[in-house]
Amino acid sequence: VDEGRLVGRIDAYLDVHWDDVVADIDALVRIPSYLEEDKADADAAAPFGPGPRAALTAALDRAAAMGFTVRDVDGYMGIADLPGESDTQIGIIGHMDVVPEGPGWTFPPFQVTRKDGYLIGRGVIDDKGPSVVALWAVKFWKDLQDEGATARFPYTVRFLFGTNEETGMGDVPYYLERYDDPAFLFTPDAEFPVCYGEKGTFHGRILSEPMVERNVLELHGGAAENAVPGQAEALVRVAPGTKLESTDRVQVLWPADNQVRLVASGKSAHASMPEGGVNAIGLLVDYLLENQLLTNKERAFFGFEKKLLGHTDGSGVGLACADEHFGPLTIVGGTVATEGDRFVQTVDSRFPTATSADEILETLQLEADKVGAEVDQTLAMDPFLVPPDSPVIQALLKAYNEATGDDAKPFTIGGGTYARKFACAASFGPEMLGQRNPDWVGAMHGPDEGVSEELLRQAFRIYALTLGELMALDL
Image (tube, rainbow, N blue to C red; front, side, top):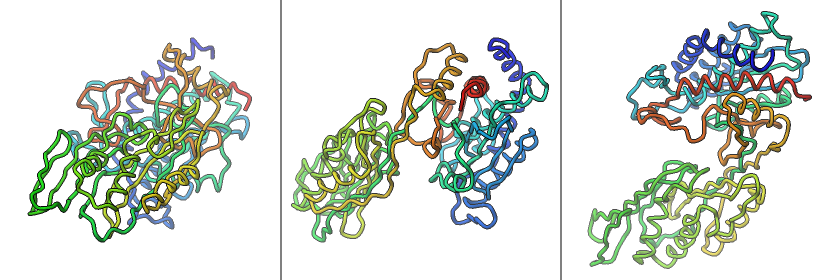
């Protein structure tokens, strides 16, 4: 099929089947498929609980009804194959698990509401909607082949349904212990045009030395270690007659004689893009230091905290570095708490190829040693990169530019997707960088999660064209 006729066929197919696509998204959104560890039962093929299990069953049943060859990998992963002339595989992976609904919804979270060209419901953009759209893009080619309008693909298309992307990606290692990597794979769980690399990730805990004698009686802040904290509080013992003033960002409350509660309000941001955030823990630290509310030991530790939290590029603690693909390292202190006689600060660093998790740990420990603190590493993932000029990345880029008329370039991210779990992979749409939704349409993971139907239709065109481009490569 020549390219001009192909685009026409894709649009005609969309017009006929779009309501079926939306119905399939709705059927999956109706299943609250978040992790429930207390109900997980690997022996019953529900390793992440009943919700992900039910969503996987529904996805495989739908794929089987579409005519794909399906397999259930013990509840960890689902397979839907479109066999080609060879066993060499082009892979697509989406995930059937979601985050819990959380508070604040004005629409029903577990059904699709169609309004003014948008779909609302948990998972419509992350990642049930894009997964269904990509599966239908494979079915478009299957239907062409069944009609005899085009030959069978030279490679097998393998669609993978994941069940644990949101909480650890424990599904992929289980799959890869039993099956080979595809020759190339993409995941419809990010942004267009095409992401060819993901920064490394380092998570750690910094523990102060025990402080039996201290002025900061309680300290807590942040909701997640992978975000700039928007809120933090401290309960502090102060000398009689101490006078303190509230600031724009720090509120001063007096719950008892000789005690002050400091409430800091910052601005939250994701750890992979911390530049727009204001770290509430850092605001508290600055206030405590500036108003001389600390013992000598506390002052030493909070001086270290100030250097750590005051620079998202790591320059305060000797971590600053960059490379040509990923740009600069980032680091945030996401949560803080008092545990016994110690202060415990978590850190999340996203790093380029210019350093490593081992080097980050070593550098942080050298700084922590100066104030009697220790650093525990809790997570380390190497940077993931497929060369941007490689044929597979260029094929995805060509399909995107052809469908949109853009002249876009590939990019890298600080976050992590399924792509990094495979040998040769990319994250690929469906979101468009810089696209704005109406105020009543929420973001992924938030209340009223929503997506434009036109965005998903555009993604369908891109994925259908992409499959044609990839099949022309010598893999």
